[in-house]
Image 1 (cartoon, rainbow, N blue to C red):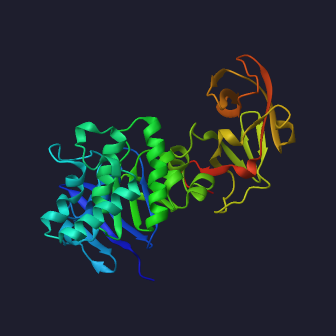
Image 2: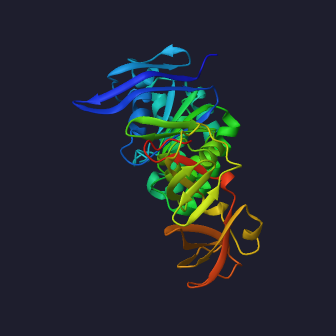
Image 3: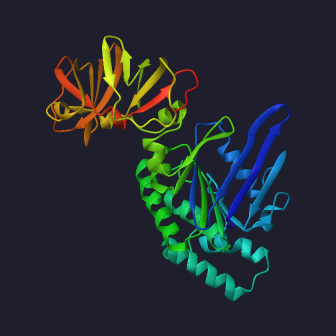
Length: 359
């Protein structure tokens, strides 16, 4: 099977500092891949290597089956959208969109066709005669996307394109980018540190840490079966609860508490009594009558309540360890209140305390 983009054993060093470490990544034609991770993990660096803006130390990059490792960016068949809009302030939207095509000496009628097509897709036709100063942030970002779109390439690269926008605009443009991908069916590689962007946009997410891809999977798998503690803690808001304890047979034991793991599916067979971390997502914890239907339940006292509008986040303790749970907004919760909390351990995640790997 020929992939749209293939990265083979890619490494990048800046002097003695290793930034990317023997990365392998195959991206199918028309796939939407998100590179996700904290600042400094190497996600933008990897995107810049694919774009040809950085020379790699070792390894190879293939786009459309062609080895482009040492090709110039203009010869790689890519369109790139940056975090900054990088529009020419003295030019109209139409001139900004067509500038690269005019420099390439493309025929005038073809330039007009491409600009009109991009403007129609991005719904910026009424803006073509305006200059960037007359546009909102969201409109400027649409123009920046349109400038990549007119290149009519197979692969689009997005480097945190929404991070300069406010929350409402980010949400709106996220939908537009998803709609754009559904219409064009081009391969898209998208860099972000925002997990909501990643979960909503991606066909698959590559979660990175220290120049290494920790897990590459669809959003459902990433969320429900994280491969290690880093991925588990990075995905989810509020973050997954982590309880330290020991695995004793088919039970998780912590201070004065034993939780049966009879329904849990282990990916690696634990050996003997192992120090482990049990991860439970706040939204998988029930309260009140719903909690009494769960395989594991306990009585607890609410410590902190944080109303979020659509739901409520509350903090309590289990076995001396802090636990966060999410409840519907109509559930009345106040600090000091005694409640029944429950969850199904089979929906949790068990990690080896020493290695951090999922068991």
